[in-house]
Image (tube, rainbow, N blue to C red; front, side, top):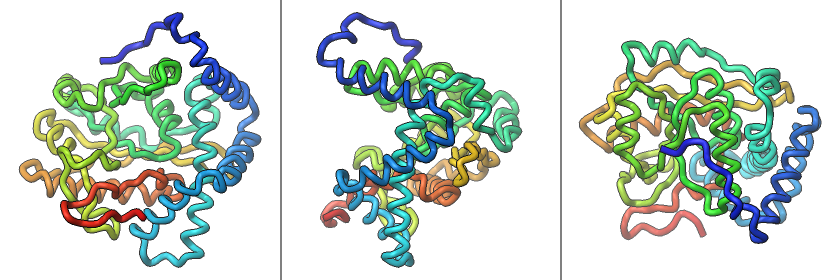
Length: 307
């Protein structure tokens, strides 16, 4: 378990000065009124596109693979909106780390909070499915204010960013656990806790199976969900943080607890989870992290889907 980190003087070493400068700038920017942040974030994302051509190409490719029915014009429009959302995601990270609870509550609301009560009936643990949306940091802060839980976490290589990130995330959550600590996750769930978990990225061939995702028939999908469900016996509760297009703030959409997970078959479990992933992504497709190479792992002998 990772709890509130201790500040160390080594974090002030010269190699971290640029990081500290960037964090101070981010802190100052997010003090601006939200309507200004909304316009500024979208502008940052759009202006960054010429400098992030590789990521633009990845986003385009992912969208073509997942939604072959879209025209080039539709994909181009969605990519632009996705990068506008990426710019907002940077500011939302600062908002999640540095805003007060009062300001968070002013601009954010959680819909269907009663589903969490249903999921926890009988003292069951909850596998909280939170996908890699660009609103991820802020969504975790919002949800944790009402239902603090335990997040799955990969330490940042930059020690200063790691310290600030953990402090920010722990403002409304209990602790964090390493993403490879499966036994620890099982203990958390058996203890009736809420475990935030993201099964939607490509984590490589180890402990993965190839399941369909949108129009891609073979997407490397973690079998971790099946392990946690068999051993921890939690409820499954998906949630999605959505940024309102009109600049009026955020809604965290909590879905009903999911029933019927196939416990005996890891491939069937991966297919089951990918249907949940698809449903949640379509609640705010322009705000999903399409710039990640989701389909980089291929079955042996099959060519890469990325040029």
